[in-house]
Length: 286
Image (tube, rainbow, N blue to C red; front, side, top):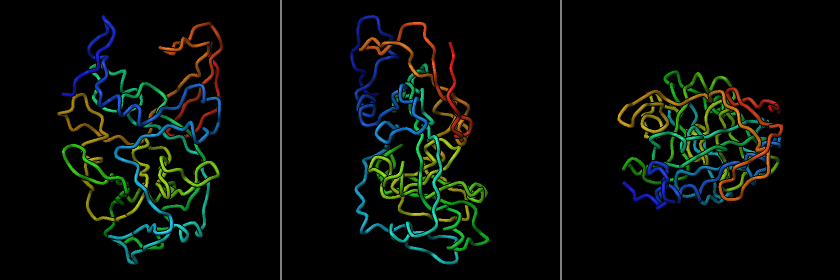
């Protein structure tokens, strides 16, 4: 167990952060809640989460492979992808671990308090159109997405991988995005290409995409079968995390005290909520 950072006298031991958690918190960033005023989150304020190192992928040599249970395997450059028909959709993404640091006992991981969320306009080519171009075989059951990011998790060396069922793909919502808020993707958001899955928690929207494999059997990778599951204890297998649940966040109303960032004053509060990833309009409460 990592050693906890010493805190002020009287602080509950369960509230102490381990150095490894502090390092994760400094690498990843939350949305400042006052930025909820923007209907579209400015790119520099959008939340970020990276499991491993941010990979360096040169656009000139980039290739996306589409293989497996398809009739015509593909290997496409970024320019070839950008020349295909595209669309832009506004999607709110949230990390499934948002609020984790409030749990008791607290899981040892990225210590999100709140704000692991952001809303952006994503531009790219529809995933279904690309898979139809490759020709889905009758044996196709799931589609596995592999990113360029690579590391060790659960004592397993792995690339980040997630899958979606063919039924989810056929909803024609997932997007292969190369643009964010009218510009190219930035490195921390998945440059040069990432998956966007509207309505799902952010773990499904694989970044730095390098390989799409259509498979005939259920995918059983770490991020699918071990991580991202609802359970009461780590020893339980639990149920998979999929669609976003109803959630709302409030814009801080007062003048904050700098250190704890607590806000005083009885003022109107504004915020935003989501239902399945759909962006809802502003609301106010007193």
